[in-house]
Amino acid sequence: MISSISVPIATIRASLPASVRLIAVTKQVPASVMRSAYAAGIRDFGENRIQEAASKQTELQDLSDITWHFIGNLQANKAKKALEQFRWIHSVDNLKLAQRLNQLAQQLGVHPLVCLQVKILPDPNKSGWSDPQQLLADLPALNQCKDLQIQGLMTIPPLGLDDAEILNVFNRTRELAKEIQEQNWSNIQMQHLSMGMSSDYQLAVQAGATMVRLGTILFGNR
Ligand SMILES: *Cc1c(COP(=O)(O)O)cnc(C)c1O
Image (tube, rainbow, N blue to C red; front, side, top):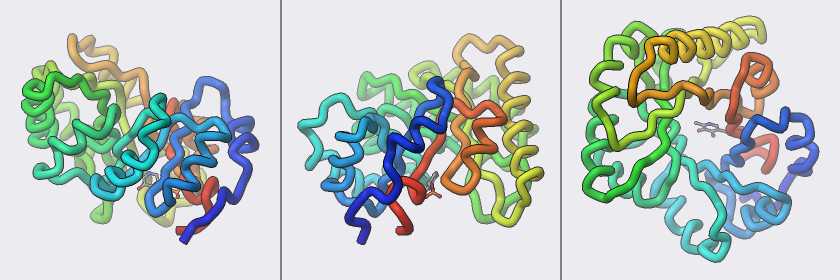
């Protein structure tokens, strides 16, 4: 069980450009430690399980300026809860899910901020649009999801790449976002790139990440 913050958050924060949003990924991190992270300045928390997040959100209710980010694989039957509990959903990984979220968002009267998760390289272990072409093909339908605020792309490189290959994945994600932005969709914005975890966030920042999702480097091994 993680019981403390391993690296001073201020050190990591200071190593990032001011424009990059630091999302503290707190799966398996108890609320007490999250409270310390909050005291150290963290306002963005990322969780990958709806239920685990719910209990910590209740415990941290008094910290009303937290922004909650859902970053995990989202099952359709948890979509409503995700919308109720999270401002951001980084892991919208297929059109059906986007359409389901849109329909529920309309019913709930919310306008979630979302990233579209895309695979730049094939990776059977990760979810996401299976490649850029698939995502491009779905843009007309995504543009119809008027109750979603589509903000950008999210990607996770496959395991086992060297630094140059990882950087290439991140650069290609940025280029894909630019290509989409240049198509001038009325309801799709591409100003955000959610990319970079503890092992590769420096490469992601180099490639233009606007949000990094850091767990291990802040809280130690899970
Ligand atoms: C766990 C997780 C992270 C954080 O990973 P670390 O390597 O611990 O920094 C980031 N993004 C997603 C989607 C995750 O599931």
